Amino acid sequence: MSDTQDLFPTRLERKLGMFERIDPVVYGDESQLADGPLSKSEIDEYERKGFLSFEGFLTLMICRFFLKNCASMKTMLI
Image (cartoon, rainbow, N blue to C red; front, side, top):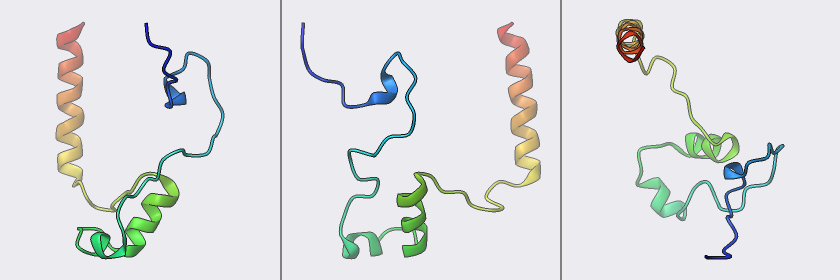
């Protein structure tokens, strides 16, 4: 059996409060990041929050389709 320490505290059985990140959220230097699909402000937001949201990314029709399919899948599983 390995005595390796698990560095991902969210996988522990006990509940945790907020904690500092061990690893960076965004990897690469400025020149590498400039070649990617995100703007500097989007990268900064992702680094600060840990997620991004894009207004209007999914249309209302797609959301309704997704929810309808989720509901039908739920009834199949029950």
